[in-house]
Image (tube, rainbow, N blue to C red):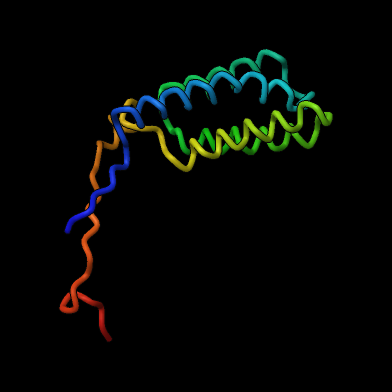
Length: 131
């Protein structure tokens, strides 16, 4: 029996990943805006957060960007008060989930790298690695 695992799921799972990408992109401004970097101008924050949010919403470099947002949300949670810290941790969990799941079929990553199907076949005794 052959099992298959899709790297870029489509259908309902793909649409759910699009919604998760959009939700994580929406919070980009809130997370990056709360990080204290006084040496940069406020306009730099807007440009950086817009670039990251657009990349995440379109599914370009999704795993890396999602993990960067998760780390930024965790850092923000430790720097802010108690009420917003729980919200930032919840946002970090959402971004980490997106980073682990990947972008889905409706993304730039799926078009660039192709939708591949990985087939997992059980190893027979004749194909086992030996010394």
